[in-house]
Structure formats: structure tokens, C-alpha cells
Image (tube, rainbow, N blue to C red; front, side):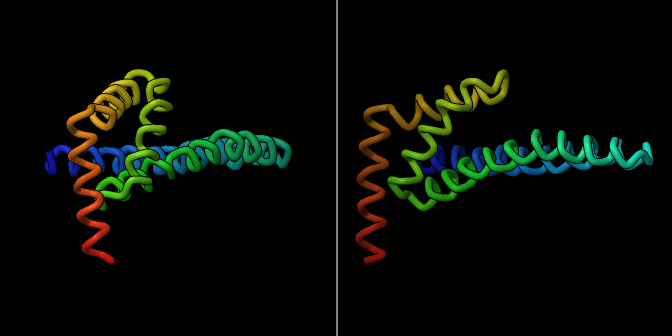
Length: 128
């Protein structure tokens, strides 16, 4: 099960990083189109549109990365955060849906949930 936790946490970190990279590329592409036009109003408009689209995508990628890190460290907040992120990912068709189903199924499974909780308590007691 430890391997499964590592895989799930790593996938969420990678998925969040891809979201951040994608939002940066999206911003550069949209804003760059305005710059290429050379028109001041087009530059301002495309910059605004790019910001309104890319910034939320960038921000929405952060919880997956933080949750993945928390899961790899066996924290309860990481597990809870990834359950929430998993439910939100269900709306992100098709790859986010697959990741969301896997995440929610894995983290809410009774036996795995108990194993994770005991592992989390072990880690917390070692750090204290």
C-alpha cells in the first residue's frame, strides 16, 4: 500500500505541475497574440483575457501539489485535501475524471483508510 500512496501522491504533484505549466503557456500564447498584433488595445485586451483564464488555472493547481506532498508525508490534512481535489477532478473530463475516481476510491476505501491513519499516527509520533 505504501507504493500506491507514493504513486497517487506523485501523480497529483505531476498533474498540478502540468496544470501550472499549461496555464503559463496559455497566458504566453494569448497575451503574445496581442503583442504580435502591435495594437495597444489588442495587447491590453488579450492580456486581460489571458490573465482571467490562466490565473485561476494556475491557482487551482496548487491544492493538488500540496495534497500530493501531504500524502507522501502521511499527513491527515494531505489525505483530506486530496479527497476534496479528487471530487473536483471528477469534473475535469477525461483525465481528471480518471484521476478523481482513483483518488476518491483509494482514499475512502475502509481498509486503506485505516492503514493510512495508522501510518499517519506512526509518522506523527516519530516526529514528536
